[in-house]
Image (cartoon, rainbow, N blue to C red; front, side, top):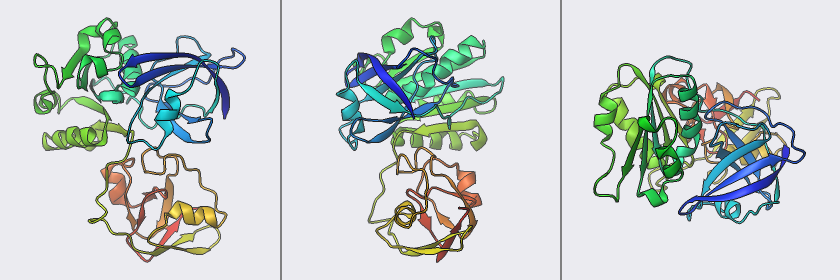
Amino acid sequence: MIPVIVRNVVTEAQGVVRLVLGSLDGSGLPTFEAGAHIDIKLPSGLLRQYSLCRLQVEAQYYEIAVLKDPQSRGGSAEVHRLKMGDTLSISAPRNHFPLIDTRRHSVLVAGGIGVTPLLPMAQQLQKMDLPFEFHYCSKSPDTAAFSSALKSASFADKMHFHFSQVASSGRMDVVNVLSRHSNHSELYVCGPADFINDVSLQAKMLGWPEERMHREFFAAPAVDEHVVENTAFKVKIHSTGEIFDVEADQSIFEVLDNNGVFLAVSCESGVCGTCQTGVIEGVPDHRDVFLTDQEHASGKLVMPCCSRSKTPILELDL
């Protein structure tokens, strides 16, 4: 973990603050590519992931923007209580949502605070003089972080704002936008789970290949516990042959942790990809939103923080 200090706190929209994080001694922080995020260890000990929302202008600074979510587990509320001068620990940037190295046209679609990883993408595409368009969906300009700055950005001509509570704007016509590009573009989507699922479903119906659809969830979709019922199974550690019982009310990660098997975990909801683990034998019952449909179908990977097993034993590459 890297120690940093909060250099500035800026209100960017209703319920959204932007933090400027700087190295303690002014030295450069690790470089990153557009779409990257960092883990932040908050003063309470909570570990949360936030997208870096601007390419580095000065090497000693990172910037994140965080929505105070009333449905959160406490992380966003704690971020909103941070003040200039507070110290934190962060990880080096990791990127599970990179720009694809292609000359294809890019379609960036943001829902609310999902704008944060797409902002550096737009900056990078503009810098590389690559074709793209940026659709930003929000309730109103007051709730859309960075909306004023985006209207005067170097890529302002590529911006399309869709404000659902503004009569002259209205919701984005997803079918109209996506149908123009299904054969020759890359799609990048970020925002609330329902928003991403809706855009992704429309894209699939319009013939977008999965390999050209890229998305990043900030939270997993809600699961109907009356529809999804957990059952007990066993998990086997390939390197040692140890077998542990996973009860219906336990996660694989909890069982591994209780038995001294280390596995890095962060989000605990199948969103961030930190705990991704190989599967040697057995069929995973996928509950994550990180892996693609093709990766789910292959059964070669699993997220132990939330996923389970469809077979009596799931052998992990640990």
